[in-house]
Amino acid sequence: MCGIVAYIGDKKAFPIILKGLKRLEYRGYDSAGIAVNNGTELNLYKKAGKVVELEKFAKDKDTSGNVGIGHTRWATHGKPNDVNAHPHASGNSKFALVHNGIIENYAVLKEELEKRGHIFKSETDTEVLMHLIEDIISKQNCDLFEGTRQALNEVIGAYAIVVISEDNPNEIIAAKKSSPLVIGVGIDEFFIGSDATPIIEYTKNVIYLEDGEIAKLSLTSGLTLKTIQNVEKTPYIQELEMKIETLEKGGYDHFMLKEIFEQPRSIQDCMRGRLMLHQNYISLGGIEAYQDKIFAAKRLIIIACGTSWHAGIVGEYLLEELARIPVEVEYASEFRYRNPIIDENDIVIAISQSGETADTLAAIELAKSKGATIIGICNVVNSTIARATDCGAYTHAGPEIGVASTKAFTAQVTVLTLISLLFGKNKGVIEPARFTRLMHELNAIPSKVEEVLKSDAYIKSIAEIYKDAPNALFLGRGINFPVALEGALKLKEISYIHAEGYPAAEMKHGPIALIDEEMPVYVIATQDASYEKVVSNIQEVKARKGKVIAIVTKGDKVVKNIADHVIEIPKTDDMLVPLLATIPFQLLSYHVAVMRACNVDQPRNLAKSVTVE
Ligand code: G6P
Image (cartoon, rainbow, N blue to C red; front, top):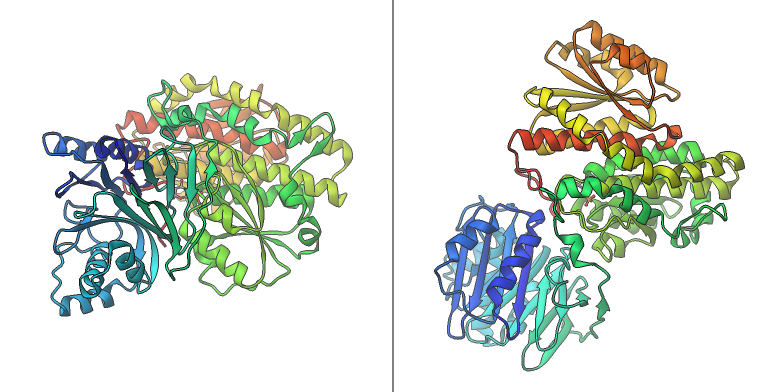
């Protein structure tokens, strides 16, 4: 995890870095720090807590200087205190470094450095790397670029790093392996960010560093790019398509609420140019090119983590039902460690909002090493996972800043629906009439989501009733079972209420024992194939005095008579219900979290992209 920002140019570095760190806080918010070179010395400020704490701390200090580095941390090695916060200085205080990733062999390196007289202040792996660079520079009398390059050859693990020195305020060194780093190229100035969000308002010209590359950004000699094996590289500058407004709250109290309300548009954006209603045709060029191989495969394996994994389970129902392709859905973190049986005939679909999740990336690498073809479904354009895959489809949901994923989930499900329809049609396993009907239904989803969002005030009133219940159960069947999982995850993540998602029919094998008059049970009870069964499950809950909050199809009378509250959603095809049923759960957990005074956009202990195992 962790966010990195750096600047070198003719402007004051500190405010640019501070603002950039606020943009990157979704990546971690345990502590923050900035080092600036004021022309004669390095000033280093760091503080436990959010970036705003750092801002307060540095208010009356010397923050002058046109070159600096900053970091917002999600703790891995060492507690989230001031000392362990980045940047880390070298022993002689001549250099400072920020790092995102993990140096796996830090203990061995530290022991050797300690033998040579290095004294460490923090518990971090990062400080070890800083001392290693310093050690090489002093032993070999080389410059910072060379010292960093050589040090990285001794390091095992993942890193995105930026280093500056006291003696040379004209240059910054940056390098990456497995963790992301983007360089913004301005006129006589450079910006660095873990993603493009801190850069976008200054320049649209960016270079995405590749693994094993190291760059020198110099105000005198410009940009030098090499591999850490010292091979010259030609930088590839590309233009960003991101818009600055997408990174602001736009009048909403929280990013999460803004992102929930953006869903009619984000789903539309996801379908644009793909769902060709009038031609009765789906266009997913990248994936279609691999179609023969996909159809020849015995099964598809979907790998993902968190909310993306839930989208993967929805995908399993969609692909099996509409395209008749067997699917297995795996947690990436489990898949990678269990010697999976996979070969060059297999197809893996990797789903990731950030395109950075370490476990998903490692699972991809493992599958690739066995020859499998990898399809990516990512939101962040040009992310590590997007680049590691053979083909794929972006979700085009736009930047998602709230840590709890909302619009990315519905966009992932939309892409999976498009893929299922495309394969179903091309394999000839979906009836033409059903295909056409589903195309129309899918096309109508954005306006139906709009309709669901109109229930916001009502859902808020339900949240008011149940906000203090310490537990909650979410039930769904069939394709709505993963929606129940996702509903429970949302509530857990942002309001710290213990919640479980369960297949409605499985309730009787355990969770039913938890039900009493205190327990809110959220049920997806829409009029689909399992409607009657779910109604029976609701009766079982009511018989034990549980409180039932049911999501029902508009106009439903049966459930209305038994449930304590019903939230209506418009009628749609059974296969598309997750795209609508998930919205009330997002709103519910949002309101509960706000009422409980929780930090909705930055829930405790979590981070948006998890770039560690
Ligand atoms: C973290 C985030 C979740 C997300 C998961 C997978 O846990 O807090 O919201 O679902 O990572 O992330 P990805 O970027 O791979 O979808």
